[in-house]
Image (cartoon, rainbow over all chains, first blue to last red):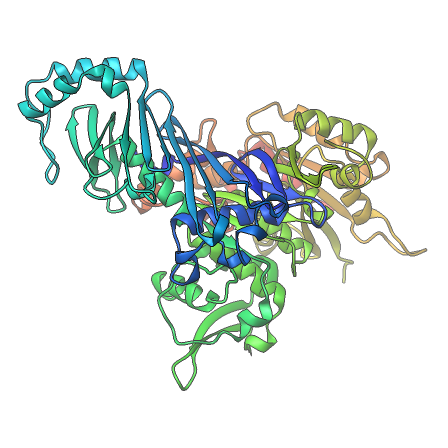
Length: 456
Length: 179
């Protein structure tokens, strides 16, 4: 099994900006549509905050993930600092249902992780609250795992670099007893978290299809199935499922790409020395470097997806190369037939198309695009939508445009609005096929039904 | 010089547009289609969507008196995705205003555009042309090779059009292109 099986299925958010309490099921392609101030961008920002908590970038967020928003009081529901914020994810990892939920506060100006839950359904639940880590094994799983462990006289296989099974181990487990392993509590550091192994010194012993991992500086014993992981080089390694889940959540959060509305004028002017960059920044100001890196790694050609789309949208005679300035900086030059076009001559829409396609080519775990339609002609929107549906990752995009709604399947749309209280409400169409039939009978498009009538 | 015959292609995935346009251009070069046939545009529309009727109306309605309509023909290409071909055709036809039906042709692919690639390359595809194409590419280019929809147009020059004639939908497409 590989980590490619990790799929984000649902997100829930409480007390973040206008998102007092929302829960949204996700598909591979998700289009958020709603009026201004409905809370679309807030939803995207909640994901940004979750990433900032666990994967701080060098600079301000390391100290305080709320700095980007000018402090906790600016992001908590109704500026009520007594409320904690919760962000939860439901994932499918290697056919296991997994929940990862984190609750935190920033009252008093400092980030504080209040509670963190990781649950692998049918295996184990880890709940950290303050300094206490509660471990709860699923009863049925533990019965089977225990029986398996106690029947073993020697390890099933030796794995280099990890502790090996010994009679002392078996003795230690027997002394603790199955009952104690079912539910117990250990003390951990206040800032410890699942994604950081609750501290240092985690290790594991593999017993065929069952693994024992020692977490929280070896104080917590966690049993889970053993799984075989295939790394990027094609090498297979054995891991406890709990580690594989940790790797999957880490990969999901750290490799998420959030693209803000692109200011093409600024992107155009970012002519810098070439640096190998494989990930776009949220403002896409490093676009030249990322596309240039892709260009080099594809033997001096643009990735096929980009090349084909550019020819489709802008003409067969369009080609792109990179040029160096006299002082060693790099910029993009577009040829329209024989005619060279330098950055000031290239349209905003051209940049926007390239930026989104480049974002897809960087293979993020989740691709989030705010205001998808900005600067784009309908043809380009059509092409980009098709590419996004086939991007190989979860895509969450926002739009205001009725044009965009009519180009997607109603099942892909999440309608965003506010209720009387001012809280964001997010809804999917319950029966998309029935709605399509009703719209067809009425002879109106989905955008007309949404804008002038009522579809959810 | 013969007046140009302008048409528009409508399909669910815009990336198929370059593929179908490429095939039309090849047929023109090989003398199988008249040179005055021009693909004026490729439009995207989900099937069973009232938007389809609006696109057709806009394509075929002259907005100035005594002027011909902007286009002469609209070809809607629909994937039956393994379901009943005639069912897909009827569902699509429901969205075409009756006054324009003589200028609209519906081409139903049994599965999807990749069935033409398989047929044109001589790959047997069973009921999953995309899977068959992926397997073919892996055999040809190595285990890491993959197929993505954006690669579709790249196959146009490699297809054996005579072999492709074995596809009912391709013959239907050829018929739809006749002025």
